[in-house]
Length: 317
Image 1 (cartoon, rainbow, N blue to C red):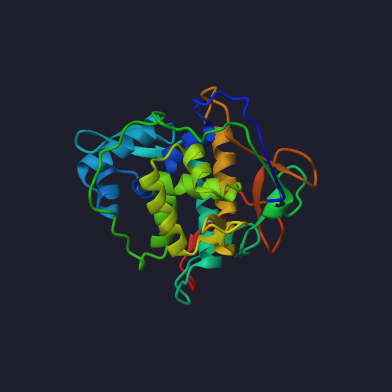
Image 2: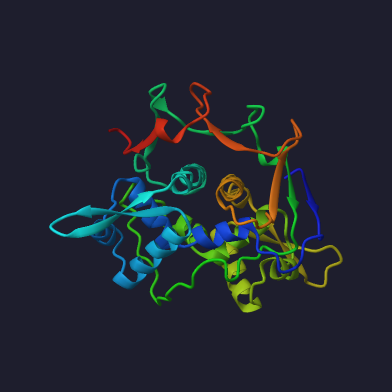
């Protein structure tokens, strides 16, 4: 990013919109449920059989998504009254986050040739390899063209979403399902601490103590997450000036690529979390000086993409 401004005028305990969004969306079961509903699976049994979740896990996540305003539970009759789940406007608005994650996968993950899906722009009929543009001035945007402001000293989200059931095993993803996000993507985005850690790194936090303070994360958890991010090639160690063996954590190019996902999460939280809470991350576009509205545009026809105008298809279909 070109610059990072920080304000400490907010109370240390502020519950932020950005943090609330990360807490709500930073869960692999939640991401899979939303994706399956996007793909047209609206009934409990369909979703359960598709993602192989236990009844307790699925019931809990559906309740969280309903109470969080991303899904609405609607009745239908099948011999007796049953219920299915439909996306609300807030739920539908998460499509940009999924597209940004797909863009990152295309750039940085080793997908087998011909395995990753195409995003088709129905308006022009071509594959829409999206580019990030400013919705206010329609100019292409890179991370270096933005200024991020931390308007709260903590990315606080403790207690902002319902407590979830714990489960010892992790979700076994099938990389043969080409319409699903990849294992590595889900590891980063499908865990609250990992998603928050990625956000903190993107906005310029580098030192262990600063990560700990901003995230409110236990040091043992932070150490494990940082080590894993180094292993994945998201972060790298850099020795601090003066020696003494002290290091901080710098984003690799692969890690910096996650900024596109963060920008979409920030936009989604600003537009869809209406609880009177402050935002903890603000982004402005340097070229026009206004708050960035992160849009995606088609590389072929240069028109800004809309949810109803794009769809994923297996490559070669």
